[in-house]
Length: 283
Image (tube, rainbow, N blue to C red; front, top):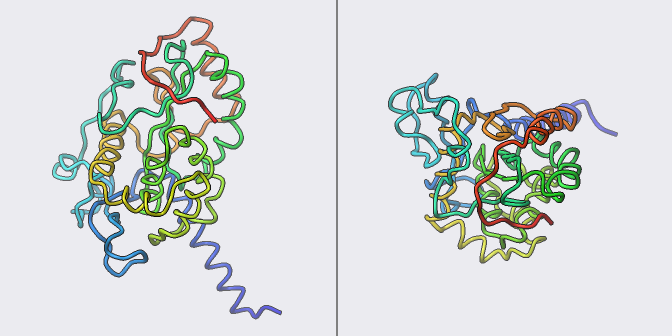
C-alpha cells in the first residue's frame, strides 16, 4: 500500500517528466545543443552537449553562459535576431549547410513542398507523426503530390544528443529512427543528459554505441546541426512543430483537416514546384 509521501513523490516525478517533454515544443525560453561539456552531469564532461539559453530567453533575462553553438551570437548581443520577412520559396528551400544533406522524402519536383521543423522531445511532433504523417505519406507523398522535408530544431540538451544519433544513423534509416525517438519518448526523455537510453533506442535502427559516440565527438556534425537550427530561426521558426507549406509559415501543430485545407488549394492551383534535390524514400 502506498503512503501519502509515496503518492506525492509519484506526482512530482510525473510532473517533472511532463515538463521535460513539454519543453521540447517551446522555442521561447528553452535551451539546445552545445559543444561545451557538462561537468557533473550524467554522461560526463565528454557528453559534448550542455544547457544554455536561447536567443529569445537571452533577450528577456540577460547574458547566456556557457556558449551555445545553436544560439545566434548576433541576436545574443543585440537582444534580437535577424528574421527574413515573408521569405520566398527559394529562401525557404535554401540548404542551411553543405555539412548535412537535406532530409527530403517524395518526388523532388512535387507541386507542393511541406517542411516540418521538429524537436525529438516534442509531444506535439510525436502526435503529428502518429496521427497525421501516415495519411500524409499515403495520400500525398507516395502519390507524388507533396515533397516532405524534415529539419531538426532540437530544444533541450537531451533532444540535442538524440538529434546527433538521428543524423549519425544511415540515411535510409533516418525516418525509421525519427519515429522511434518520437514514439518512445517516455524511455529516453529527461531533463538531464542521459546517453544510455538514447543509444538504446538508436541501436534499434542499427546504430552502434561506438558509432554514436564518434558522432557526438564530431565537430562538423554538431556545427551542421547548429546551422540547420540557426537557418530555421532566420526563417522565423520559434518552436516545434513549425511548418512551411510552400513559403507559408504555420507556427502551430496541424491535424489532418487543417493540413489538408492548406495543401489542397495549392494542388488545385498547381502550387510552386520544388527545386530538384536528392530524396530519401520514406520507410
